[in-house]
Image (cartoon, rainbow, N blue to C red):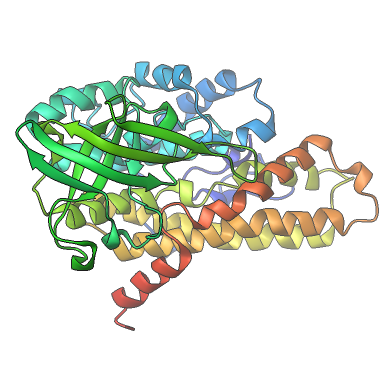
Length: 410
């Protein structure tokens, strides 16, 4: 099952082309790269055993959807095993484990192509954000539901005309006797049509020209009157992106997360969770893994394919090491905004390179009739969805500008 056959201490660096059962290879051990603690690595065997049964009937072209795949029952099954909100405190329904434990889970979910889209955002960033900035009442209400796979969240950041320039948002809340009145629009909101809640970045004072000043975050119950959701069909035929409209939506005073006017600080901390994990490296991994399995056969083997596999490995191994090191920074309470942006930018580039390079390899062959049909179906899906990889979580130009500022280059 692809990356599930890697040596757990180094991830992709331990995978071999000829024999996936080859013993451990640890070329990164001597480089001082952050290791995943043994107690967290110990999760892998039981997670793999569960996934091998739970998704055994999903073909690769369905597994390639992974964190875009929405299966509420599967998410609840993970919650029953304590695998949702695993880093949240036990007092709120979590397991109190380190970010490395979640990292192991996420790697395995993505490597297997598990349909994790239902709980994905709630587990990855909404829960940690509520834990860090929420009131005790918010923590008591939302976090146990997230851990059980009963409360699904979407992200309300991007807006029409704003793109990844989050500081120019125009969606606004105004205080009234009942709390706040919400008006505006969000776009590219993943799975909004299937979620109960949104955490939205809104303007609570001033105007869009004020940039970072006057921004706040609010929790929006998407069942409230005045909320409407319109799915957007993408090139791959999926409809997980949505437009969300707010027309005089009445929010309670408890909808505000953290301090009024501190939304920019909060959302940049939230984006470190979104931009640094394995999902920024492994969106094309089911396709790559399926292609690699064919390359290992006499029909699929070629020198150019072996070179391509090596190119992918040599890029993926250091990126994964960077991603793991960011988890350590998050665990220490840091907000590694620039390193996370770097991982996201380089990871997205690799994710988009994989389907393009595999297509070049397959269609340059003399006899494409030998290529397995399911491999072609998976390639077709990933090729169609790959342009979105550099949209979600921040566009390439925005991320590069952030990196340049962080390096003192602008």
